[in-house]
Length: 209
Image 1 (cartoon, rainbow, N blue to C red):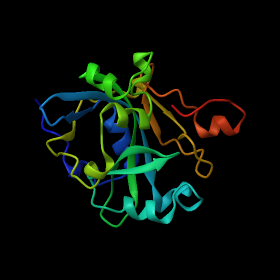
Image 2: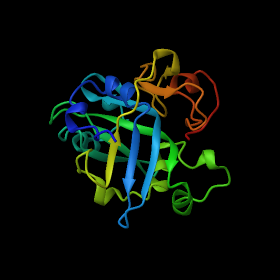
Image 3: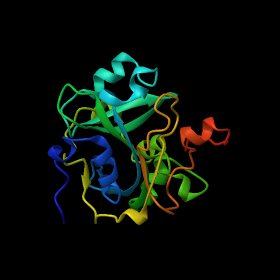
Image 4: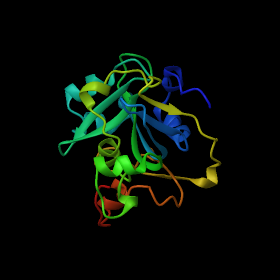
């Protein structure tokens, strides 16, 4: 089995990290030893030094400061009262991160469904808040832990060729809505149904997944 991705993997441009996280496996190990795992099929980058979303209301000051932790450590932000899982990027003191937006369940599906009962299995982890609830993550416990810890870590996957990756604008922002910083595995049914901000502002209807 490959070793988990180390914090050093995240000490760089979050757009590169987000693209390369596609196909990796997020693993949660429960206290009794059961593994819950899912393939990362969608991720977004946030890079406050050059990101209009950071200075135009997408982040408040406390949130931006929370992102400026050492690279390769877990953190959360809250959207509409729901926790969203991120990993800090770049060097300590710089506010940058990758948001994990959707997973394809691989292990522990039954337990995930007890954490978050749904009618359609594809709705279980096809959104950033959904996957947090399905994995039973407690932000108060996880936030600040290194990304290669024993109870929550990312295993590398096979590199994906460009033709299997779709790149779009991010979801739910106004400033920086044109930046192509959302990455997803093309055609994967577990990708969130959310509409990119650029399309939404042009009159396309849709909702966050």
